[in-house]
Image 1: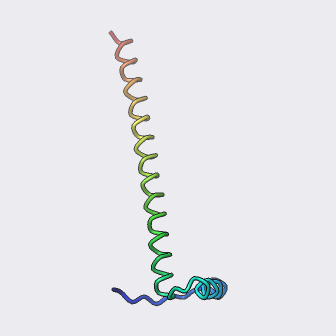
Image 2: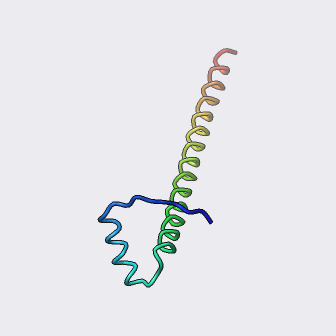
Image 3: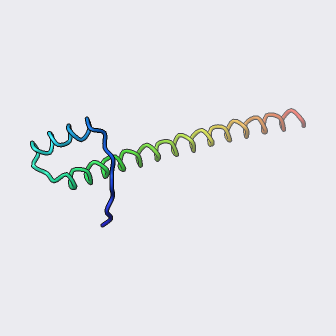
Length: 76
């Protein structure tokens, strides 16, 4: 396990402390869960961007291929 030092805005820290007193979790556990959740969210976002990019590249390639076929048909 790694040790990390963080600077947290006062308002975020205060809100976190209020929540921690209600959910009965350690600050360390809470922050680990929050980072894990955010990492999952970011990985989903990255995967979606890759899918969109791949889709755009495929459609662009498809349109280019159609234009090439059309051009070749007119040449003959």
